[in-house]
Image (tube, rainbow, N blue to C red; front, side):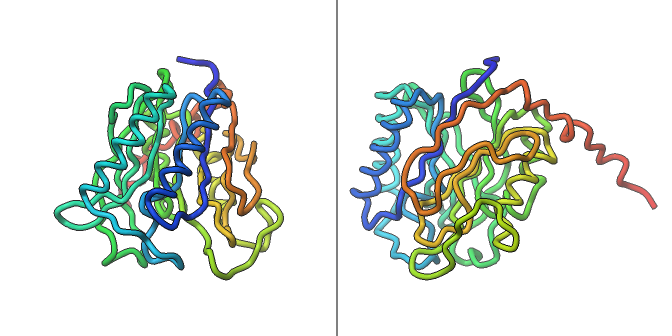
Length: 268
């Protein structure tokens, strides 16, 4: 396994239509590849955008989904850049939120579905089932999507206990039209989200990589948290761009996750 892993967290602005969204994806993938990233991750349901927010979601169906996935997969191949692309996936039961993992050869390696929906998403999306562990350059990693990482820490621990060195966290947290503009990372008082990022890393002794949209009123920065729970790097609030950080994998021991002993919690 590699000793280090350079990751890229791509933070695009909300797009008005599919052409604009794909252009932002293309450009940010190019920046990530030029910076030497081994993998790039995009925020939650970036194609076509997360429903129920204060912006319009453009037309999206199974055919559009397939074309968009094919296009991004070709760019991943062109750049030899493994890519985590969170999308809305039309299914028989309804709309699901998934993170598709595309390999450096442009082939789909698997999908992680969002299994824990925010209460506000009930009736808009359907919950997925199951969790997966992925790998890039021999480095195991997990994916949890937005609400899962904020409110359901066991989703992160699931991956950590199976050897994940880093868990990627595509999210959408904040608004476009009104809100409070944050100025200092992790400030108290303030939204709890960045403190939750710290806990997901600290309580498992792994890296935690959380990627948001570049929103006008962002409630959580795109951030990389080290295994001690400290913020190693972040993008300024509302700034579109790519956060590049090299992870020291020797620090991701998974010690605290490995010590979890669920069998001790049964009984009187």
